[in-house]
Amino acid sequence: MTDSSLYDEYYYSHNCGRPYKRDESWLSFFDQIAKRLIEQSEPKTVLDAGCAWGFLVEGFRNRGVDAFGIDISEYAIQNVYPAIREYCRVGSITEPFPSRYDLITCIEVLEHMPQAEAEKALENLCAHTDEVIFSSTPFDYKEATHFNVHDPEYWAEQFARHGFYRDLESDLSYITSWAVRFVRRKTTNLQLVRDYERKFWQYKKENFDLRQLSLDLQNSLKYEGAQNWKLNSQMQELNSTLTEIHASRAWKLIQWLWRIRLKLIPHGSRLEQILRPKNK
Image (cartoon, rainbow, N blue to C red; front, side):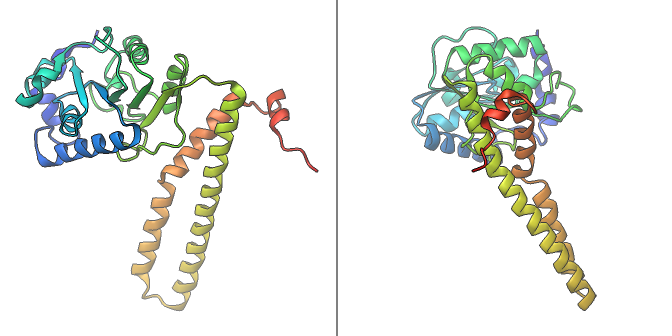
């Protein structure tokens, strides 16, 4: 079981990228998350699973949403703002919640739990809502309390076991580049394949256009470099643009969608033959 004593004053001072405290930066960050999620989903009730100091709960409540929080750290709950402390409590997200919610948020939490415990928590989330906003770092293995780091497809598979699938139209990059909106959905493999193929094609086209832009920029750099060696600053700017392209969300998502496609439609499978466009 997760050791709650790990998440003490030292943890929040040193292990959150920058000191986690009640300041304008953190409050503004979570307030904007609350604002955008309200615009997207219009929830009346929200549970923040792993609420830490309750900043997201506070953001929702400031905007009229009946929001609650739960966290395993007594130290964290002690630091919740007094005006909303009654809405946040110490507890484990593996234990059944007192009610259902329109929306459950779980942001950078399950990587801190042993795998079996995290899977139990995920099942519990799915049992109490039809919509989950979820993120879990796919690469930060250095942090001492990250016991359970997985790629996004692992979490997508776990949610699918409970009838939840990625909303392909939602962009939650304002939370993290790997944040996902999972929704309960009755669907078939054929419908899932069509949805993923549609999105895969969209990102493939975007990726192609980015590659073409990259080539055009490189050719422009070569030409300009040959014409005038003083354009070094412009070359650096264009190279920075190329770096941004290769780090873009579309570039990463097309790789993720391709892995999903291969799982759903193996090469040479009957399903691939059915879905393959017929030549007229």
